[in-house]
Length: 378
Image (cartoon, one colour):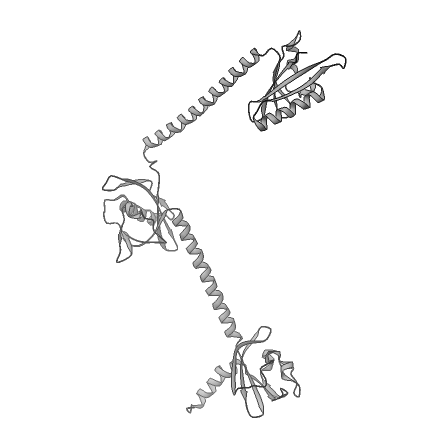
């Protein structure tokens, strides 16, 4: 070891040795503590006793003593809660030496660095997710790097060069080459705007034409954030043409009118069918739902059929006996389920003078049936 001036040796001892709170144990080959010293209180080990097993008093040494090799180093071991040390193990012929050098501050620094690295990775992932989200929206995001020069943020959409930008492969930037383009004028307007105000500004829709006559409609938004000038360009529908907007509105109204006219025609046809059916049937006819509620009816039996109209909106059981009503309701549900005509027979009158009636049930909608009732000849 080279000879060093005393002042330097003292300095090195102070900053490299004393500042790291060295402490030591000396044990025999059976693990019995013979001597200890140094800054043991730093590690919470100032209560160790000589003549006793060191591994029982300092559990972090379990399995390490007696030392088999001449030297060993265990970096950054937690020797007590919240205290870390580099453990240096040395062996002589009959004794083992354990040197503790404080590593708590280094462990804290490494923990902070790991945390910072994790935070950066999380931020990078979130940034990547935002860029992927923008790409899925089919939006071009540009950062201004120089006059009329921009760098794409994230993956640029394939149509970006159609809006008045040209890509310079060697420099990896987009340029506005033509000073007569709409985008060139908009960038100049943005600079004027930012001289007097703070915020964002929209370009309004504009159209670019390819040499083959294909039209592309765009709209740009400029914003300044974090000292950066950001331009967002998106494709839009050609709603800037008033004629297009009026034509689209007329089409929507025409479709709505056709839908209402078709619905009115269907209702009229249904009313005509019901009117013909009601006028042509000589017996009783009911329109009911699956719960057996009378929605409409016509009664031609008896001297005063109109008296029965007061039962519209009432259940069948208000006119017919419970068993007869239940049979017709079950037939109605079966007709709605199978979409086939259902028939049931039930008697009306007293035991001495009863008449058998037949009901035919036909589904006419998702929740309605027509029930035609006529008496059966003897």
